[in-house]
Length: 640
Image 1 (tube, rainbow, N blue to C red):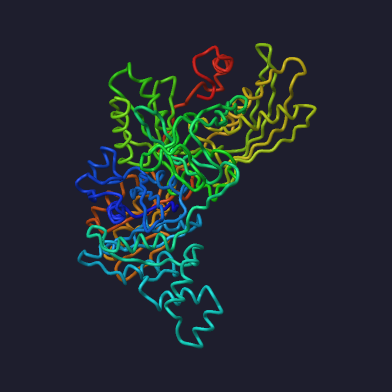
Image 2: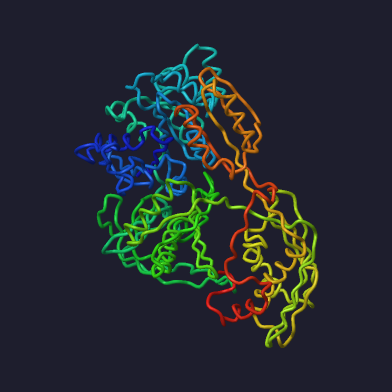
């Protein structure tokens, strides 16, 4: 069994390639078309309507007696979360590059991430039937921009160079004999590919079905099979699907052990924000389906299947022993949501239903965070971009029957403390309660995050209460005085006390946000805006215009590199100024420019250019309401 992902910049032809691989292997009778909305891996109505992939889709085929699971991933940057999650399930990858457009910005990011994660890969240069396609030019781009360890699979000299660079004894033989036999090149190359030391380049036209059998042969030859581990249970959920009869199904890649129908599974429950405890949840597997929809009955190590019955389990959660995972790709590796929008509906009676539906969608996507502002009734959701919002709108209508619209996006800011200050809380009334805390809070260097330490002896605050303080800090810092997450601050617990009789087990959980917010009020707030590192590849004649645009967006040009056919401009630009720049770039370059974006960090934002966020839940400095909420005397909780 091989679990292989197909990756590409948008419109490079990876879904068309997947269709032709299925056809060549006899898995389908007729290849579907992306343009006509008949592709087998594009099942959502919006995918068929727009002709793009928005969800990773898994299909199975058999080639020369070898089973292959193919995961076709989205190419558009708005759906980077789908790409990230597919990495949890893969053993190897095929990177598709257009023979006309060549290496594009998203291709660079994809290759960098795959290589960093140690996932072996080879390249397929597609669209070789198109005018202007040039395999030698694109291979040179791959070697220049991605890796020097790439060569056309038909280029014996190029492959010999890669082999000799990896093996000194082979280099000595080459210098003596003047060549390496092709048979030896063929026998040595797969081992290098599997350890990420070589990247063969195949060519063809997916649309015409040319080169597809060579790609299938390459998967068998160059990419490793899944290990059939008989160790302890270990699996990761990387996607969710919904069946009308069976309900919620989890796409699961099993790395160790075995799952069977009707097996009893113990899952960790939701962590209680007040106590930090995670209760166990008992589940029973109701059915296991294969990639092609058959009832499998069991799932073994190395396999991918859809498991029903594990409803509390979330996407990204590990089943069993997490130490057996070969890698753990953190959400946001490709791209982090940097904007938030308000979700609205014309029917006030549907607001709670809408909030519940958004919570379900958020459960399926670790990056899709929803926030409900109880005082105003507003529902906010983080978003990657306009296309992702269109997909969300479609999902709310088709799955939940809800009509929704979104406001213009607002950048997600951070905040920090302006100057050193003290935060104090004396939670001693009304009895029974007793928790006194005193913090020293100081600004920290940009990008350093939050650090915490305690100077308080155990005789003043017992260790178990100090542990509660540390547990409550992330929640206490989730909103500052401007409503944004607090970062770049040093916090020291300098004083406080518990009471032998009056202290309740959760009193220090309640007191921590109170004291932290007091310190933030005393120290003042600094708004921090996200800054992006942008790599813009454009025709050389547009370089001056791009540099001018960067300056107009309060950005800095950090580097300019010019090649024969393009120029690469690296710039640091505030996210708030560049939200519509992909569209503007396409207009400026008549569609011949591309850009890659990643979060660089946060820097001080001029107050007049930033915005505050509405507070969720009760403000701890509104002490009367806060205490009532903490004691469940008000609707909602203190951490809503």
